[in-house]
Amino acid sequence: MAAIFLKKNESRRIRNGHQWVFSNEIAKTEGSPESGVLAELYDQKEYLGTGFYNKNSLISLRLLNNTYEDDLGSYIKDSILKANDLRKTFYPNRESYRMVFSESDFLPGLIIDKYNNTYVMQVYCFGMNENIQLVVDVLKNDLGAENIFTRNDPYFRKLEGLPEDDTVFLGEATPETIDDGSLKYKIDFASSQKTGFYFDQCDNREFIEKISGGKTVLDAFCNSGGFGMHASKAGAGFVTFLDSSTGEIENAEKNFALNELTSETDFIVMDVFDYFTKSIDAGRTFDIVMVDPPAFAKSRKSIPTALKGYAKLNKMAASCVGVNGYLVTSSCSHHVSQEDFLEAVISGASKANRKLQQVHFNGASFDHPSIPGMNETTYLKFAVFKVF
Image 1 (cartoon, rainbow, N blue to C red):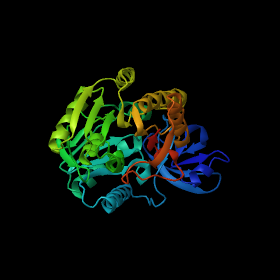
Image 2: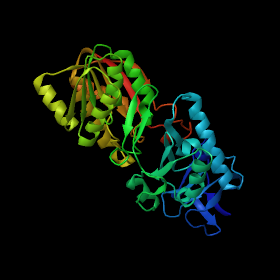
Image 3: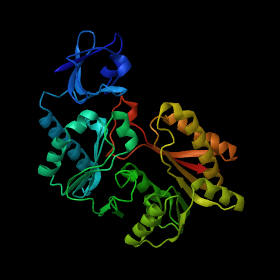
Image 4: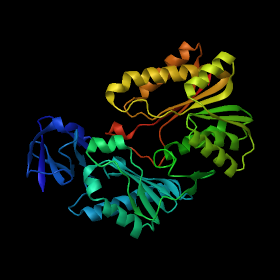
């Protein structure tokens, strides 16, 4: 097996649990490793772990767990089954959840979302991609998969030097009806975003029920309608679903009808910033304004622009919250820290002459565990404020 040696004083982060080795941290390689092979990692003297090597990526080595013992097939099977068991601990009555969360489950660059017996993967590690049939075999033979396919983000595939086309490994990408523990969603994989559904906000959507009874609610960047539907389930008087995507608004309408919810509703296709501008000009407010935008920062260099965007968005959102109402705001940009995100929200609200009282903060749902020594695995910020 090839060997990778770190430069002097570069091992502390790895010893603390981080699972990526960057190209500028490597002193030398032995064995002329090609991209996709397993390689052992050493500092000046000691073995630190084994991982997938990629000579053409900024992330040169993605480590496996320290329990790896030279049998990749057994390691992948054991890791997937352990990951699934963890989800069943928290969601014993659900058949749909994020089953594997890449580095957080010690399966680098591999995401698997389970939709009943349909498994949708994203693969962002060259070595995992080279061995993806081992993953498919576990899903099929041990978990009874009926459909297995990918829904990759081309941006991250390109960073790894991987082809951007998606693959169907088993069955077909037919629609599924899932539930999040209390509400149902019709998932059309051909038109939905990401793998089909945002499981990371499931626990946070449930929290919304605590504050929504009898309220007027705006669900901005509504996607498939989850936040607004949970508000309606709790007895919201009026829910406005807002998204720039016609397809997502259609999905939200179908999901609302599927659950036989009874709140009065609007389903609006419009740019969220444009909608806020019109609402502010018209003096329209809501008891609860929820904003769950896509990531504003895909790289570190875009952080300043992203923070300006979060400040602007939350200024406009806070302006549309009635007195003693609630602002519910999220960020899924892992490059943006919790501290910086909250500072942007506070700054935006201040510019809108609104004061905030934080009543809740959370991260991603239980099916998105994190590694304490690896900030990249802790990405979602979810905050709820009383607005004065």
